[in-house]
Amino acid sequence: MKFDYFENEWGKWPAWIEKVKNDVVQLWKTDYEKKPQWVLTGNGSGTTDFDSGKYPPSFTPAFTDPDYQEAPPWLQRKRARLARDVEDPMEQFQQAGDNIGMGENAGPVRYWLGVAAGEQPYGGRLARMGLEFGSIPGLCTEAKWAISRYVHLIRLSQFAPLVHQYPPRLALAQIL
Amino acid sequence: MPTTGTPLGAWILQLYMSSRDTLRASLNSTSTSIHITFDSRTSPEKASFLAIFGHYVELKSRKCIHVLLGLRKLQGPLSGANQAGCIWQVATELGIAQKLGYFTTKNTSANNKALEYIAEQSDHIGVTFDPISRRIQCFGQILDEIGKALLWGESPEAITEDPDSDDGSQDQIEYLRAWRRKGPLGRLHNCIRHILTSPQTSELFQQNAGRHNLEGASLLLISGDGSSWREDLAAISRALLLRDPIDDFIGSTIIRDQILDECSLAFDELSSHDWDDLTKLVELFEPVKMWTIRLQKQGAATPLSDILPAYEELLSHFDNQMECHSSANSPAHTLSCLNAAWLLLREYVSLTILLHESTLLCSVN
Image (tube, chains in turn red, green):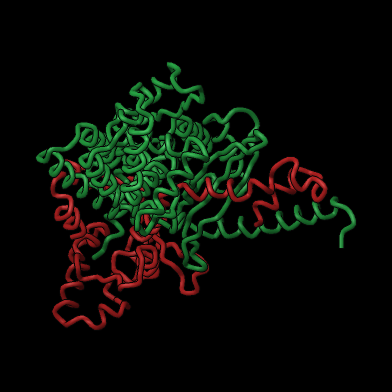
């Protein structure tokens, strides 16, 4: 289970781990579980809703990831069983444990894009959650740097002969 | 070729509008939330600007996009409501008001207010937005606060007033005393300040350093004034390189002056024990410094989930250091600083609960 990581690495904080578990499940149930199902379409131009109450077609194990194809038969059977037994995508993801691999160069966003495209059985809603969480920035330094970087362009006196109006200077800063 | 600035301005605006349409199309093509980072600054001409960045997964290109959504001049004060009004306006113009995700910002009360304002506005359009759970602390700022606490303890405010008065005045004495209360760090500060106080003393020190067969003998001392921990740390590291010349210079100055008043360097002389403490202090900063450099390189491309290893490393490092410094004969100031930094880190770990949720979902191995 994915929670294993926290139990192993953050074992000194049992109360906190318990809170995280509850929070994750709660967040899944309130914000994502009821949302329309979607998977990434083949050309990446958008998403397709799967609002039939069923999980995407890949739920009946149609694994396309190389890890699955190369897995020994017992592992493939185990995955298939997991996919059949557990209907909740979040539980399914948790139970998939170490059987799913991201590959060395794949990041979380790429992994969840793969899930959104139907590469994993737990499908779109969880992928949406994964993508949204995977793209949260950890720093806000870019905004600070942007102003520092462009401040010479938007100073009132500088470039006055070049650009008479104030908006073009802001616009120029944004384009650059 | 334009002959006046007017058509050039118009061309820029035209280019800006077309770029904006492209941006709007990209933002609207994604069905996932768009996360926001923002910061405000005052330009040298005293005009306030707000930069708003959007972070999202573009499904078409299947990439994480970090884009400047708006750079606006703020009318009025740098208040939370004022900033939020600007953010909301940009979000509405780009058609993403209903898609706003998490906000990674600095830990300030103005930013809290800004998110409350956005929650109110979201409520008006029928979107639920919890200003507390949608708020992520900027890890860059967390590192900065930890650095300050590690150097200056529970009262990180710096002694920045450097009275440029005649030697012997009461202000000058108070200033030196205040720094001495900080232990070896404060005494080193006074020594460096004394050396750099005039071109003559600085040159004398350089000549003295040249006589030592040191690798960094030609380097200049750095004067940290407590306003930035990075600069203060650089000052200590440089001083450690030039330890022998500094000791020699202080010794010779004490002998030469022969006046023992409050301004005398005799009160700031550093013992070998002091130098050891300073070396240990620099060691304490290793992971903080390493992560600061690493994150500066990555910038906005650092997802929240990548920050968990930093928390792990810092917590484990501080745990070990607390253990070492509790048992060893460590100076009270260092222990107090370490404790302050450790408590701060723990507080942020609890505050940044979403960080772990995010990593939980992202760590599949």
